[in-house]
Length: 334
Image 1 (cartoon, rainbow, N blue to C red):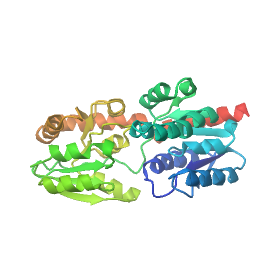
Image 2 (tube, rainbow, N blue to C red):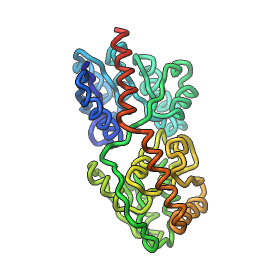
Image 3 (tube, rainbow, N blue to C red):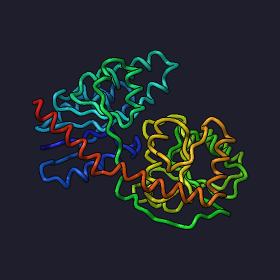
Image 4 (cartoon, rainbow, N blue to C red):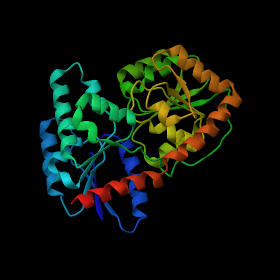
């Protein structure tokens, strides 16, 4: 069985690629499955680049199955429906464009409604995303099934003493919904260092200048460099306002770091009892969560232990088994 993974263009992030690299490695261990990657040549900015990607995708068709790994959902329109799996990570494009009726309608049609109707099988990475699709797209989304993301095997347990006097906080992602501004406010006057991974907007840069916070900034890191940052830090902060899954929570738990996370779905479902949950809209709540982790060693140790148990539920082997079942189902339908 040949499965071709369709990936978005380079220059649009690495999180999706990391997730499906994990899946591809696990599938490669099964002798009856062969995988390959097909990356879109253009970033999806405007109708012209989308049209070029559609034409490119249509020319890549070979025997076997096609799996669209996220973001470029519209590629399903160029592929045979009875051989296509589409994975949807979130509905952030609709959330961001609610105040622009034309853009909302465009993304609703080309990123969600038509691709969902077209693909033979559609998966969502969390029940939260599935429920959003049902609410936003309607009955067409009833076909959506939930298969979670898998933790990459590079994230392994690496214990280290917690630095209570000068802790290092790690924040993965800097998009507006990552809530970095409130995190910066909560860390004001904190005797530690904040590591930010992702491009910094002018707003974030100005806030960092206004707040006396020691910080480091990185972007375009490879997998090894990101793992190294998890190992360096004392705590991972993930107080997002919106998420479709929450991979940094699992990555932190796998490495053995306490996690501060938002009291929202799906983060509470993903993190289980291995995270300290706070109100992401309240700076005081975020600050109290940080202080509790920093000052209470017993609480911190319990979070780490619970996190290590929780991450076992998201193994590459288990997730790959679910996708293998879907691929076989598509093959039987043919």
